[in-house]
Length: 348
Length: 269
Image (tube, rainbow over all chains, first blue to last red; front, side, top):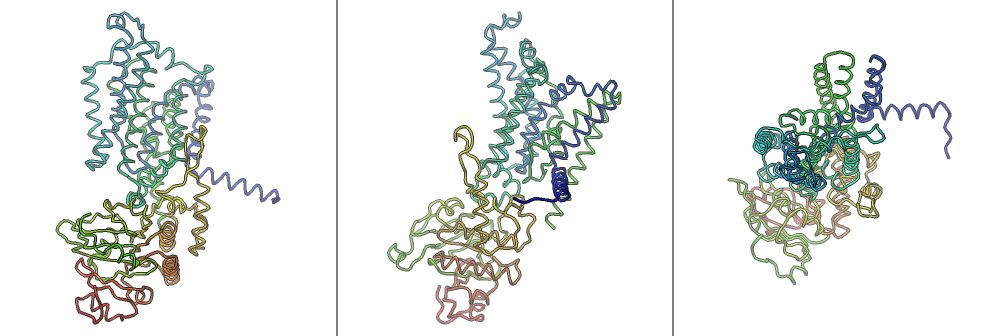
């Protein structure tokens, strides 16, 4: 056993702490913590520190966090998906329509009665996730079979998905969605603190973290993003792999759609127009490279908190929340600049 | 891949050929990169593939390793005609390649690169239902491969390849090929970016691989070095193999003559 002198041990601990702080997820967590403390101290009556406020922040960030964790995989492979917002909208419409259709007869649901609600909820959930996965599969097929750049493909399907959502709903929110999915789940909290949707999101994010860190699928995703040629020459079927990444992203958008519906109790046809960009911004700020090959689910999760904390904190302080957009934009540019410099330094 | 079987099986076994690429053609758009190239390599021999730029050396090695599909011709590995050549099928038959661009993933660690596409798994979660990467095994095997290849300048196999020098990357690519090859190693300009000492290490690896019974094909412009390293030299010109000669029977002038289209007494395709 080796015994270190106290000063040497202190130096070891200090360097370990410094090294941890330099890792992006830990650095982001420190920034988030600093923001919470700052807003907590500055807010009247320490209102920001209240459990109810912090709990609401986690609920507000849940869907973006899930989508950010999902798109981390897509960016890690060197691809991009701009269509996740419209995927969420379309999947929400399908979820709501199936839910309403299978929860009772048209007359019953108009009267607010849902005799077969469990069936409606189960079928609606499955339909929403399948819709999202199919949307992702279409993106994946276009990217891998037609070999069109994923930026262009998903820019195109963004419009197509939104259009389909309008066609499917006639441009109005799906009526007669049972309120109980909101009151019984979407705004419910475990022990009065942790919102149910947040538990679902954290569980899925843990699974995604495991998938990226510990499995062959995760390693190959990073390899494809780092060098597609190298991955192909190592015998990896890169096209098929990328296809699965888009399906995974789509399925997660489907889950996000179901959570969204339970939270608001209604579809939001005109919503999620900036969701994809918010998720991508969080992922890049969190330390995932926009150029592929390097990714961190933890960083994406923590960084997705920053815009919501800024918005909430600024509102509590009475500052117009528009400043949040400016701050997040500046942080995004800084994060990409740091990533570029790091790559240049390593390659030098 | 289509075409005749070429050498009868008995004669092939007698000659000891483990790689036979026969009458290979390949066109890229308007460019006919290969027009009936033939190459046969024996187990345990080093064959140098030389020729001017554009002669078809790299394309022929890419066809043999499955990275490029031939338009026509026959590929036989260890006596088996390969009907659907791909990197994966050739790797499964023990054919490994060191590409000119090394084909390493720069963001992955040395160990991850060595095992990419063949990652070892261990049963991990939920009663063995979910398999996870066996990182410890990857690390230990990578360290052993580094030691066997004489690579002592890389502090840790956990370092991303991006942080390594050009020579170190080249050494990793060679070590990966040596680690997995069971039949043959193809090397496309394996020492182009290396200094003298690192070049010597690579040539030692080539000798060791051949001594292990592997067939080694080296594409190189360094003809003097190839004359001392290889057992035979194959010269390519205009997409064809124009001469295959024991290296001991050739001098530098002979090889240059063959490359330029002249005839050297005793040389045969």
